[in-house]
Length: 135
Image 1 (cartoon, rainbow, N blue to C red):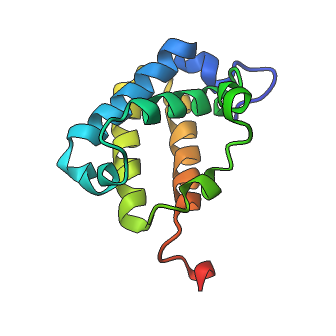
Image 2 (tube, rainbow, N blue to C red):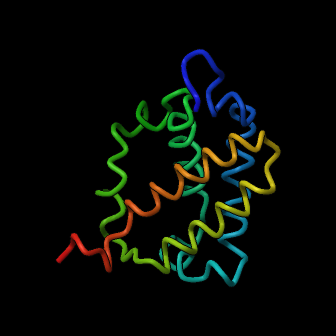
């Protein structure tokens, strides 16, 4: 869908400003929506560090500068999330916030669909409770 001959998702969302808007809206929703209370409870009282880390990660993940890797090394997403109990409910609450943030963000529909699919895949990968492969 996106390739070297086309702009990156990072470019298409508006670069740094676009990624920051997405991340800020995502965490604003997580912080205030009753639908996200379970996932919010897994985070620190302040979401400042989480906001910055997600921004750094998404910058590289979307094809922009690899800011997270430069600062923290390989993301090792699943390993970094293992201390938290993440089941279907937490996955779905995270996706609820991201879906709304994506819908509210101005971007081409093709990009929104692409990101939605990728976020669903990553969110499912973070699950560490209730998975058949966890025995």
